[in-house]
Amino acid sequence: MWRKWKRRLNNLHERNEFVKKELRKVKVGSRILDAGCGSQQYRKYCDHLIYSGQDFGQYEKDDKLMIGAEDTKGNNITGGVNGYAYGKLDYVGDIWSISENDNYFDAILCTEVFEHIPFPNETITEFARLLRSGGKLILTAPSNCLRHMDPYFFYGGFSDRWFEKILTKNGFEILSIKPIGDYYSWLGVEMARSAMSSNILVKIILFPAFLYFFTRKKTQISIDTLCMGYHVVAKKNHSDD
Image (tube, rainbow, N blue to C red; front, side, top):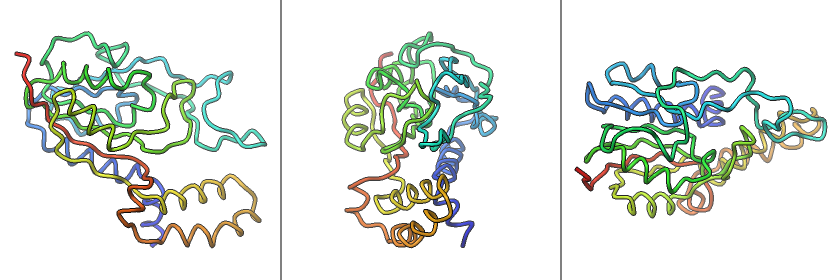
């Protein structure tokens, strides 16, 4: 049971399964762009594809920068990044202005990047330009998150309504939008985060409330009120050929 709870406390596990599943569906030999690829954690699942990585390549641990929120003792709450290492980058620069021809890629992967982009709408437009007709966009983004990877943090999250509006406006057909977590699980996770960064007394006080919220069943209302993020799959419909 603890293993199951541990997975629920970190939606990385669910995101990894989603990304691996969608990458397996991309046709062998397709060109894929990993946009905002960072350390390229999903490159190993792209052996059947022609992989290219893009990032601005400027984030690094700097003691002068506030990498994450801190408590009163100066301890990091959200988790900083020490020794952040990029994978091999094929495109270096802004994600909303990538130096490549129109209709070049068969698929674009972009995971947990949009909160770090100052121009998210323009980025979707750029993805539409780069994808061929029928090309696939695999995208994940938070709906609610704490400040992290500062100073490159611009949004706390995006709603399903934003995806519906901006993707459709740019000629995408949305194949699926899956919410991750809900209001109750979010409360449970934040209580666990608070407890882990506090003393034993706080842990004891928060534990009953953590159990109450973390074990509550999802409802449509609890999902619509707040969730942790969205997993999105879309297809480019229009053609610029």
